[in-house]
Image (tube, rainbow, N blue to C red):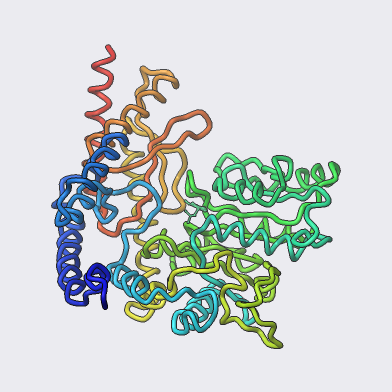
Length: 480
Ligand SMILES: Cc1ncc(COP(=O)(O)O)c(C=O)c1O
């Protein structure tokens, strides 16, 4: 190679040296975080300061410090006190499969650009379809995230159910989908991208327990029809994001059958409960769905992004995109499941099936049973601790590993409680020992936890509650 620069970029020796060092540092990080030896889950820094740091680093920083600085300035999802957003504490084997994917860089759009990973994708999605209880007509695909998967499912729904060909002719009449007001915002976004507009998103109120109120389905459907809207799909959440409560999929399935709608289940977070012998009943009725989404990077221990989109009738997934790109897509007289780009939104995607396949191969599905069950049990333990303490109240008894709670004080009115809980959360973030998030539910400000980490224990919750009480007292003291 003539270019010295390119030769150094591709130097196998340099790669080996740097790679070995990084693996050693990652293993140390894993040890220090999972044992809680790193005092903090996050070293909070204001965005402008962080921007300044990295601008300076590009000019003057030492290349050798790149890893350590990134580590110091990133949230540590493997830390047991990380109980915030829904993202997995990655199983280390999937860190290695990410490395392999990055090196091989097979683009996956057509079979020859990812032979092994395409076959693995078929195997893991077939396996997921079987777990749902579907027959051999079912097919799945892997795609880049729950948001994109939900959009892809709704595009398939429109193709299958709407009376005219919107893909080729455009929207010629008002279309709509039905979804709980508690569903993840990406469903709204998908509907807007599809041109359904505000009136095409028929919001079904949630019941007292934060699940879609199935008693409202018939009325809402009739009202939409009376307005001339052709409703083609309904989305069930399994569970919804803010509260972690599962919709009644059986009841939704029954409604769908009466009106010949497409039934989509957004199981991005809790679809993985199909593996839990103890909690899979929460998904009863999902087998009636036409499509299901399950994120690998949430409850299945994989790195972002990888999502399974599964179809009860595999042909529906082949019909979603009828775009012509002849250099990629040859017409065939049999099902070419192996040319992934025909069925995914992406043209190029990572070799994400490696993560799923490696976990199944190395640990088996028992891993997912154990993990999901443990985390869902843990939320119930935390709920019990909170219920036993007069200073706390929970929003709703948890069904999954998501739990919303707040600090309460009988001398304060609701606005004061809201402001107090918002300040508690801000101080916890600045402190950095624990990481949890917040949400507003029916006018109340809650602290919100997603128990994503297999190292989190009840003892840590006890410490958290002590810390929250101390924080609340100091906020109230300053106020008075
Ligand atoms: C229920 C639900 N659906 C969809 C999404 C979006 O998934 P992703 O972040 O993989 O795009 C989320 C994310 O939290 C979710 O909780």
